[in-house]
Length: 527
Image 1: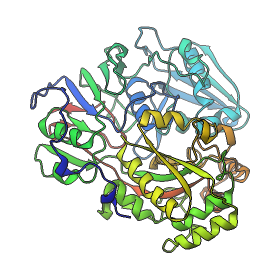
Image 2 (image 1 turned 90 degrees about the horizontal axis):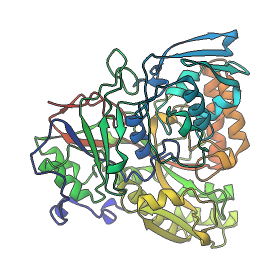
Image 3 (image 1 turned 90 degrees about the vertical axis):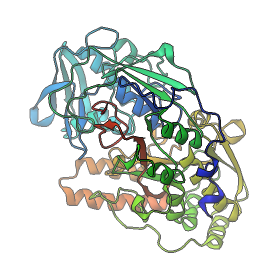
């Protein structure tokens, strides 16, 4: 199955769509940055979803106690420093002086306590920290104390990580909202504040430089260091049509397009006023995610059968094109650059669709309707879904492919209802590569049932091995555990890896200071 059969936006289609009224061509304002995100910002709450578009929004508005650098090493951010006592079971964190929220109130330790408690109920890595907390308190306005049941050396890393949800610090009055209820008042203490009155869902979100933000000393490095905001105003313009976004970028109507489609990147590379490059060098991992709560995918043998129909390169070419510098196949359940990576149990060889069909029948598949969710306004996800759908149909699955907008799909993915009541069976998506370096923050690998990421796998062996990994005495022990995790993951199939790809981004050549990693707006300026 070839990518061109599915791609609906091509360079030849340029000019066929009406241009949005963003700004006159070439009239760039040095104070304003115009950005096209990967998808519509459907959810504003930083812990309300694992969607990366929400995470990117949160990194503008909220600050975190620690921040990891581009080597995934944590550094103090809102924290001035910390001390560790009682054989690693007491952590005392002291906040930097002068921190304030966008509503003018000071950041206090009790805000931190409430924020961590709310975030820890939803985040998978945060859950590991919460499980060992005996008491989390604010003995003074600037001091936060973690009293632990046992040592947890990962504390700064979990509080400073970048995916999938950040440990965003918000006012106590908002953080006391139930973790399952989305907040709509967005108040953080980060370098930009959210202008709710200018929000136009599905079209526009606006941010303004926060004059009260005091950056740390030193240069910014991914989520750590001095987060200096140079633009007075940042506008996120949702442009679902790729041709429209490409034309707007070339005309100077926008400054930055987060995820250009691969068929349009050659056109953009040929424009001297545009830079096309990979900023996130850890990449993204394609995933095929099953709903473990619904038939037929409550059966691990049926889930596992689809391994035999997967050729990862098909999905990678769909995502970023045929340039092999932009993708790596042979992906297992851990990032290939991680010391935890293993080839154990991952099937090799070409797809055998006849064998998949036989294995499905042997596993008990009886023609149940399968609802696959795809999204029309998220090209990478849509293309991977189309390739998966083609394979499903060829092996005899009774498939109902439903292509909807991203806001609808992201909402439906949270539904545990049967498919005849709006539920779903399977979907394709992607995960940040940086979250796959170990089992601690690997959201798609977590298998703790109703507390897991959408799909809700229940695989006790993975959970036990994950707990063992936290207590492992050295790297060799951790590697052995991860090899076992991979064997179990292949047998039980929480999801199927679809390969690792490196997504280029495209921006006007006069932008300087762009940091590696996810879209970050501090340090960025116009030359």
